[in-house]
Length: 176
Image (cartoon, rainbow, N blue to C red; front, side, top):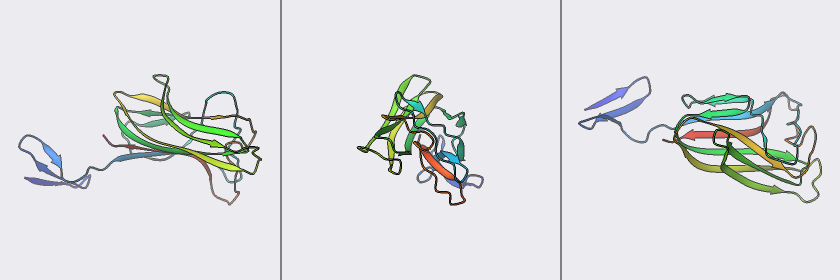
């Protein structure tokens, strides 16, 4: 037996005991960013410890029960692939990570960025990519650490092109 589910655009077949999807299932995706109005810099990069990146914009949220509140992402149980990046300007060393605030544990550690004798006009972007599984609903932050403080534009320099300034970006895909 076959059926087409018009609401979701999925074809299913009956296995004899349950309905199963024909072909690959569609992954659920959520994308969040740090977005500012045109001409606004990314903010101060402060050295000394791991700090939360202030994600403030939901680009798309296709993961059921996923929320973004005050820069904290709440994810339900599942397996996820995460890709994120953040620009840094004028700082010597930088790194980002995905941090599980519920369990106080690192989830994914990103790449290292380094610029010897960095100047304000030098911008680098660090990134992370990884997969993790959570057995229950947990809260996550995208965090950064830098070796030198730079006010106003350490977390990104604006372009003033008349469109939103987008800095940090995180894409979360629920695969199971």
